[in-house]
Length: 428
Image (cartoon, rainbow, N blue to C red):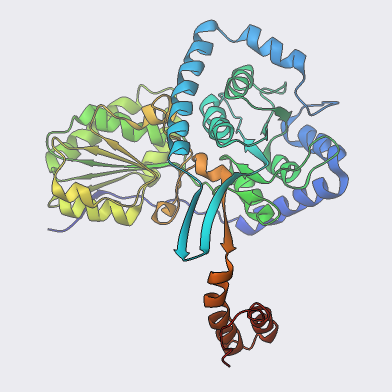
């Protein structure tokens, strides 16, 4: 036995992708050419909100602080502090470095934060406060001078007050009531009210993702987020109720979300399937979670942990949970994942909200080559060189010969002139 698929699913594909691209391109062009007027019209058209100014005012912020319960503020501050501590640890590991490769040849790098960054915080039925914290705080720790945030209106009013307070706790500099592709366009190209940024981060819907794709090059972007996903490796010792709960925690994100169980135990797999059905009936988000689970959920039976690890590395999940009694040698071979959660006491939900590691992670298998959002996302590694006269005499002849080999004779001249006052014999 290699793999037995007790339940299979496939991600739905958007048959209207070309139409989406065209719509997003049109929105971006409107914002580029008509600025604030286009943003106001688009906000009215898509979010049913008329605003004279897109900037969130001081009065709106103060009102949000009054409306948010004290215990929520304390929870947000707790989460923010953990995210900040983790980002600070990451930043402390990154240093300016210099090495003397040859006598008198010094080569090094500086870590330079981008000057400005824009964080997109999705809206929807509920406030995504965790995205505000996870997007803004690493930028702050990295040393970004200007951090702005955009988020769509909530229930045809302004930005959700919980989201506003989370942005303030994270340390944002400017906040704008703009959502969707038009927010990405505004941050990329600028308008009368919004000065453009150097880097845009944060997840969003298909329009936001497509807009980030289209503005890349004008600005940097972190990643092109797809539907959320989780893969859980479990053995016969795993708790089926906990496994089921963690699968559903991803399924309720979106009808396109993907939840996968890979197990060495058929008995556990059957128990998990029963638990999923039992818990689905209780969920307030049953409609979305059930659609996701029925369309995209998978349960895969494998002969051993080695094969389970092989499946996980092939899927390259955004979130990888390991519900195994003991960490064994095969598990040390896991290498494709956005974030790893070890043990049944470590669910994805902790990473989403309170443990401190960033929850903006690579999706759709991109963990094969991409990392999640972190403090380094906002840092440029810029190299430099410094050459002494002694090193110049060593480098110039080689550079001259290689330049001629490539047919770049002005390059060769630039190297040759460095030999003018040296005692090195010029070689052709």
